[in-house]
Amino acid sequence: MKIKRLKLAADYLLKKNRTVSYPSHIGIETTNNCNLDCIMCPRHDMTRPVQDMDMELFKKIINDIKGEVEMVWLQHYGEPFLDKKIFEKIKYAKQNGLQTGISSNGTALSSDVIEKIFESDHDYIIFAFDGASKETYEKIRLGASFEHVTSNIKKFLEMKIKKNEDVFTVLQLICMSETENEIQDFVSQWDIDGVDGIRIRQITHSGNHGKFKNQSKKQPCYWLWSDPHIQADGTVVPCCQDVNAVYPIGNINEQSLGEIWNSEKMTQLRQKHIDGNLEGLSLCQNCNMYQPHPALVVGNSFLDYTQTSRLVPRAETLISKLRY
Image: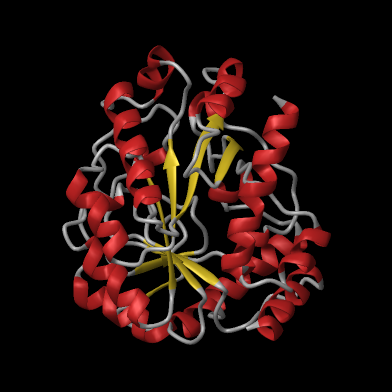
């Protein structure tokens, strides 16, 4: 796996339009159903049908990538715990040697759901919680209750400690005008037992999304070498920002991910980024997605993705405490 990661880093840094057949991690959209209407979420613009991924399709993906991919993120544009088969999917991925990660809004964390998270041997969870006050949180995460979600997360943390579970747990806030004055309070509130990392993320968006649009630097996008996502119907998109499959690169029902990842359409997309020619790529032209420093790309290659995904939030927590 380390050799593969090093080759992937070299392919990106040397600007090759083909890369290793499988990246170290992928996103699988187990559902695109969501119970909130967050003000910054591009899901507002989603025109795809709302659906859960069929279990047989999920198994097909896992059977394809096992032994090649290190970790799967079981989300894209939905709340994973609304998928009635999410724990069946987690268990199947784990049985096939994959690490599993989820980002959740925390609204569906009943005691039963929490127990199942631990029983499934799930590895990593991010709780997206934007705000340190009821007013700010509920202004951003429309449809959620500050008290209810806070209680849910604290119940999860209490059970995690009581059971001595090893689910890596991150509390995440997106920095925007509504939250920037509450970052210090957020860090203080969640610097508690059971929380392994506190992440302050900059808002990222692709395309023109009203007040959130932000012109990015024109440089090859690292995520085109590292971060494919498979949507609920099997459509493969090049990165997490493609909410409506504006640039579909294939479908997992028809091809393997390895075939899709170095297909003509994908290599052409990478080449456009290498050439700095984003004409006709509205998704990319106004994207402000974070791009890692070349030294970080190389450094990450020496660690497996699971190690990196745990080290980075711990470093971010320290930075947040010092900065805010």
